[in-house]
Length: 145
Image (cartoon, rainbow, N blue to C red; front, side, top):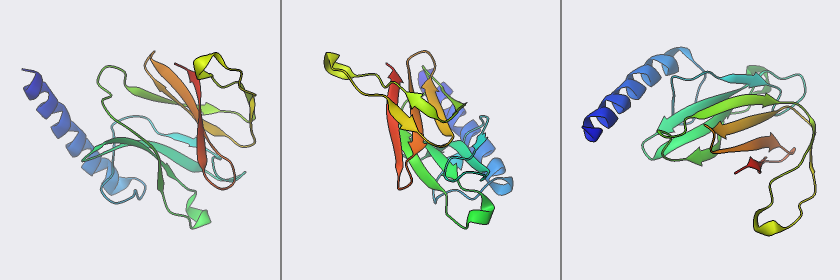
């Protein structure tokens, strides 16, 4: 029964993804959008209308940032992950500011300053992180575990 549900879920993702990709943003090769809300924000540069999209490919799932069309930049996968059935991912807009990361091992971590809008990525009630662009690459910090 579990395999039948997984097969049905996969078929739904592929069908919905194919329809959404035909009308949606250009994604990196092999990635299709999940039937989930997207998130808009100025993730790469102030004043841009970038879009964060939850996606799937043959190996798992990912978060793709599609830059503002006027930027001429290409969409990029900024995070990959696996099994989302128990804790589906959710996106939220994070405003610029200082954020205290979760430190593993009992150490003390300094706050991280985020200069532009960023992406909050939570997996149900399991964990949350912030993905932000530091001017060169996307970075992430764990907020809850």
